[in-house]
Image 1 (cartoon, one colour):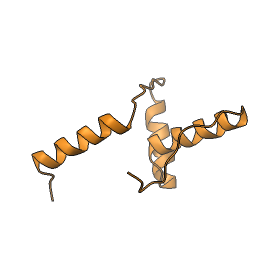
Image 2 (cartoon, rainbow, N blue to C red; image 1 turned 90 degrees about the vertical axis):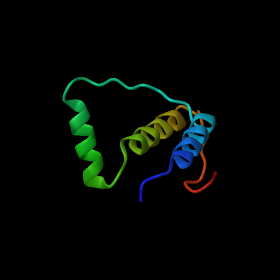
Image 3 (cartoon, one colour; image 1 turned 180 degrees about the horizontal axis):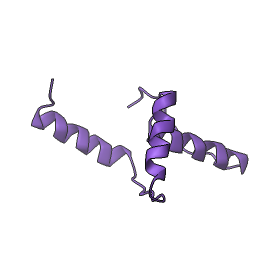
Image 4 (spheres, rainbow, N blue to C red; image 1 turned 30 degrees about the vertical axis):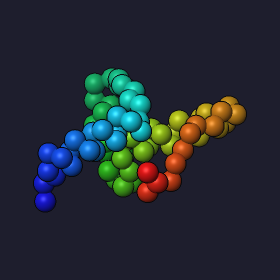
Length: 72
């Protein structure tokens, strides 16, 4: 069932309040490779990137802010 305009607006408002955006650039062709990798493993690209960042930063002693998947 499609979202109503009010639902889209509420989602956009929450997203703007709760999340920062970072643009990621990859060499041509890598986008499809990354998407295929994620699809084969049931991951989202965003989830993969966040997971890799958490691991790398934690290895250097830096903790990212995290929340539970259903926490609002």
